[in-house]
Image (cartoon, rainbow, N blue to C red; front, side):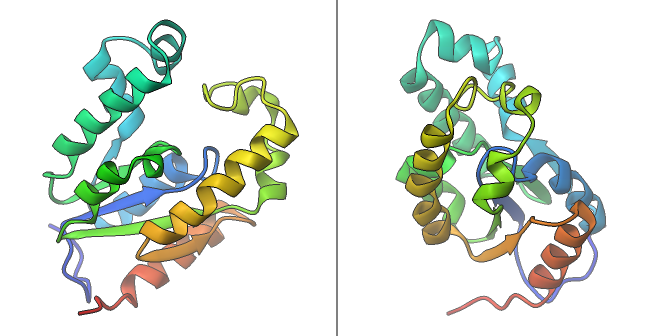
Length: 181
């Protein structure tokens, strides 16, 4: 059973930069609304039969994006679910069009660039697009993706203090969200 909401949506889609909190905060958000939690990266690994790092190393980013789109199509049909996407989901308009369809609420978790840039190296190295990245490359990725996150989201929230603060902000934003006709 799902908690009563003022809104009519079948799924919540989380978008944002790697290390913005989509998976960690997303699990708590899904629990709050009694939604199933789906980590898109885990679904990609299942579909490909190899880790994301292996996909990048053996097949390249283009092949990864194709698998990502295949997974997007199947996840866009799910209901009563919260989906934590990968940071690059917004780089393909067709992915976002599948998620933008009726019944989806897209929430952008915005993390200040300085917070992202000070994420520990051991955490960053787990993300293929950020592994051994420089400050300049991270800044370029942020500047490239930020307008896309803003373009596709229904709600923008922030994760610059604690996960608990971010979670409270997200719940408040979702509960107060009104669909625009």
